[in-house]
Length: 422
Image 1 (tube, rainbow, N blue to C red):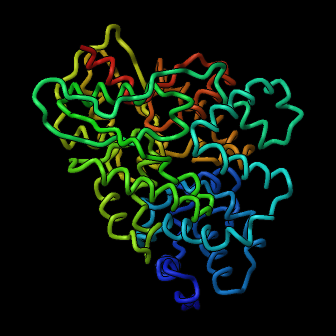
Image 2 (image 1 turned 45 degrees about the horizontal axis):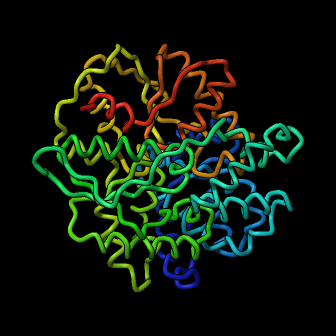
């Protein structure tokens, strides 16, 4: 049946939503690729079911509140996108829909959920605030069992101690002849939970002849807020980034070390559709590269061997594999390291349950996905886990510990750093 969405009624993204809805032929190929459908087995908890619900809301047949329980349970992992034979841009639809209904949906879910969202919005994108909140939160972890589920989930994810690293310099020089010049996004959550990833990335880039600029005016990429429907706040952060990265001068790429950040920056064109900044946003999105993606395009120099043999399993971050299409690059880089054996999970890149803020807003489902992923990792026989996203590393570490598995979790940049150690 022909859809009745009127694009002009839904702002500059109206046509995006209408096109996405009309592209879905409800074939069902997305079902097996959807983590929530795999766990819950409900049609409305699948991508095609959610498309029907979003269509109903946009046409006025349903209210956003009626659709909310199912749409809110979507991780936004985009595992359905590569599985879809019709090429439905589900991510664009979900992002635009959440922005469209956010104002009316804010009061849904009760006081605890509203406060959880406010805490996320006001802390995670701002490293200084997040560090202070995390320090307070660590002191209250013994209360986790007595708190609402969302708050307990936040506290459980915090590490025992917050690492301290000096801030990166404005410019990190290349080692030897300069092969490229890049700008680096340092991120927000990663700066607090594992700032050493940034330093590892800088050293790896330098070892490969890359001079790296760290723009001083940069902010959180805004992806956390974008995927919560907090469009105005996300745009404010993104505008700061557009200015900061434009001020760096000519670069070969803008590098990200967190899958969610890279995906978010590559969505800047959609975020600023119809806005004066649209052209600059599209240009920055086109320049954005994940660290592994950029190194492979550059042609990585041969790394040295690890000090001791190590068997690792690579876990795909959803917003790297499904959203950005970066699947082969990290594997090729890791496989080239002498003394490292790379194993596969063989689960098709199924989400671990982190998914931005999902493990904070949907703790029960996220925990089930985390437990399943931890079991698959344990069955691999690997000695460590490698991934390309700070959220995945925190989620995997938590559920491996709870499963009694003493497996360290490393970022791809950290493992490369050891191999390129000078």
